[in-house]
Amino acid sequence: MSSPLVSLSKTRKVPLQSEPVNPGRRGIRIYGDEDEVDMLNDGPGSEERIAVSSRYGGIAAPVRSQDPDFRDSELMASMTRKLQQLEQQVQAQTDEILSKNQKILALEELVKTLQQHQGEVTMQRQEELETLCAQLQQQVWEMERFLNDYGLQWVGEPMDQESSEDRTVSEDDKRDWMMAKKFWKPGDSLVSPEVDFDRLLASLKDLSELAAEGETQVMPVPGGARLHALEPIPLKLYQNGIVMFSGPFRPFHDPATQRCLRDILDGFFPSELQRLYPNGVPFKEIIVETPTLAAERQRSQESPNTPAPPLCMLRVKSENGEQAFLLMMRPEDTVGTVRALLAQARAMDAATFEIFSTFPPTVYQDDALTLQATGLVPSATLLLRARRAQLPSPGPSLE
Image 1 (spheres, rainbow, N blue to C red):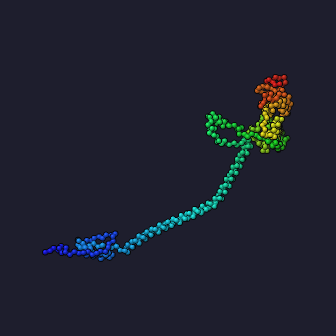
Image 2: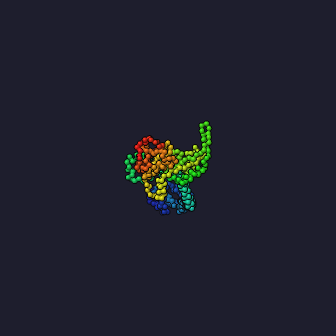
Image 3: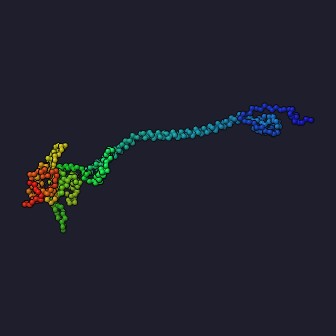
């Protein structure tokens, strides 16, 4: 009796040729009953079933074939998504380009406006600077005029033009320079005075006419007040100074003298006399003129570049010390010439006073001696006193 397995081995089933399977996919073998496989293949949307013989049960697993429509739909969906993304990206870039174009147009308009107004702004700025420069020049001119009214002159600070050799100065030189700067004298800043005598005399004449002679002024006295007639103020004019009232001598380089002369030249009474003479006072001018001074003035006017000849400067004080006379003489002038000039300036006899010096104590009685011989060159200070008869002189006399 033969076994059932023998019959199976005799008849061999050959599987059907299946359709080509998508190389990208691989079929899955399903092992089971034939009915179950048919039920699965009969369902909706099922794919084509291909029977394959199996060594175990004789049923092969179905192999699904790829649908071309399905592949096209997936491709279309993918392309649609990519197109939507690209459209969104293009729209964003378009908006960005439009925004940048608007900014560029605005900046171009701004540049054009600035270029149009650049010339106008430059001209306006130039006018402002020119106006400021004119104002500063006016201020500088006013300050210089103000300083000149008081006999001062702005010199500024020296520019640093020292060479390397000048910088290697010793400590002693630096110390001397610092001491000189520390002890500054106001007279160092004064301008060399130049007085216009013609203008000064004209101003004095005008002021004297304003304060006419003969007017009275209330003067306080013990127990009351009384009227006092205004007397002209004696004002002696010298080449280098003035003497008001009875002295002392006031040189032109003195700041107080310069203020007084400035007031007179400006047409005002001197401020220093305002307390004593609030309504003004006439002046009586006295000019002490020496032949040497006149010759020197003429020489300086005719030949200002020629060197001045040697001169002798004599300062003579009166008996009471209230008056001082400054005389410019030549060395060859005599003592008698000096005596005659002093007598003329004082309106008195030359024989009533003596000329002497205290150092050395000497009485100058010989009018024929020259100033060079008496040792009064180039400058000297002399005194006056009343002539005393039959009295020895205070020192050796020169006869």
